[in-house]
Image (cartoon, rainbow, N blue to C red; front, side):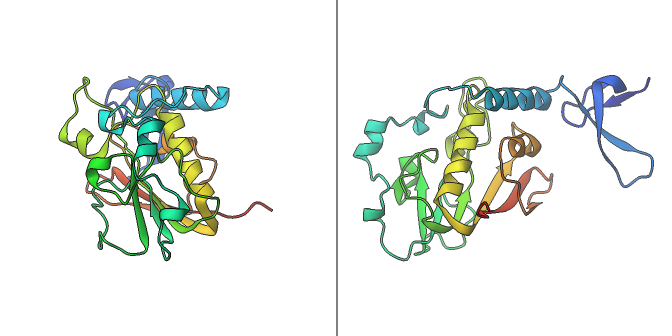
Length: 235
């Protein structure tokens, strides 16, 4: 039995502990990944167990301290309501951060929303509990935190983008996605961005009911993925 190197954890394992992912451009060669033993495999199993069992993990905030906002503190902030949103706002960015990928960071048609008040969003709100009625926007942008905090210390990336909670990240990400789809109008578009810093894109997509229409990578290593979803009404 042959040994191959896992493309995720880079460890050599016997074929029975691996699964082929895809054929490469070179005829006869394969790409391999651990079935259960590497980090990606463990996270995939954990995500599925949370979602299949419907385990309730409460509403604990994401692990970045700046993201922990109680319902009371949100109520005292500029909480999102349709009453305090001017007309002509038909685009919502639910995790805007520092608006890094926006060409116009003052776009008059966009509501820039975030849980972190220090990034100066238009509105402070939890992306898992959007304070808008159903079918409010034509376009929603969803770029949630994608990293785990390393050794309990927040690097500049952690502080800039927030971090995932290792105990409940599947529910956090799924709740955010479901909320984005809820506030979309019928046939509205959701743009989803994910960087494979801690969790693979295949694991993330496995927790969504809706599959993307198409997508593409945007960095040299192919770790950052942009995907397009459409809210198609159920017949």
